[in-house]
Image (tube, rainbow, N blue to C red; front, side, top):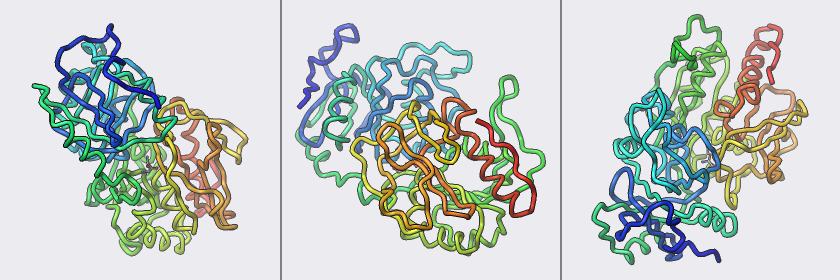
Length: 407
Ligand SMILES: NC(=O)CC[C@H](N)C(=O)O
């Protein structure tokens, strides 16, 4: 077992007599550090994220509900925080990650877009942080032993009941079996017309949408909505619990199934019947991440918990339909079990990291989904073609020729 003891702090990082934050793992391991962001305690599953940029998007991705992120990149916070790189639909909501684990204290921000120090931003969003941690040792442990449950605690005076925190971490039932989409969905329907960000103009407004798309919000991210708007979709967002009838009442040209937190198998009660109604109506369907997993379940497949999951912006994925490899952004701890897919469904994408399923489509039908986050992939040319693929499915229904897929 790898020890993440207090002496694991780099002396170059900080040297404080009092630990103002703790990460207490369910097996009783206690990691001491310096508290940043909000004070209090939170419980969740600890995963590591290997992205070198985009920490603000990661920390506002509702898919991280129930999780504590340890960043493998040591310098998080250098470019501060702004009001634009937020992924939750509700700007004020902190319905995502429970806590954040950092190697080094965030420096003073240096970026023209920065409005706030990461510390103040975390505090404002109610996210608890711990810095000064040997994140390499913690990551190595997760790779060996899987993602542990833990409590993260921050108290300015460093007063902790360590035994009680360990008991709380141990008692937490874990993500398996947890339905969290219902907690993070915005719970109301609304239309979306913001398009993607450009230097000089910021975010734009959609002018002449050509397709009516219903997007189911299991914890949807703003940049997915923007790319749908860029692709010419007038998007109506419906809550996670919308029924097939609610969806079809909008007479959509296509239906989008969003990312989201928790165990897909536990989210089926309301999502699966609605998705089955959409499939029966023969509409084009595009799903991302939790949406991909929910689609697989609706088609008769199963999902399983992963050992360490995939969280980062450097995950190679092969698209069998084109033979190309994409470097993708990912955030998932469950995966579709390829062996359980019915004959009518084929695997379209696979992770070149561990061979796990990363995409499916229904044979001869415009119904497909991917496990990764194409809207956040590091190179737009890599993965944005999936939005064109969705548009082409809707164009085909109108008898219009396909647009070329980029990438
Ligand atoms: N980003 C997501 O949609 C995550 C899906 C699911 N909650 C998982 O962990 O696998």
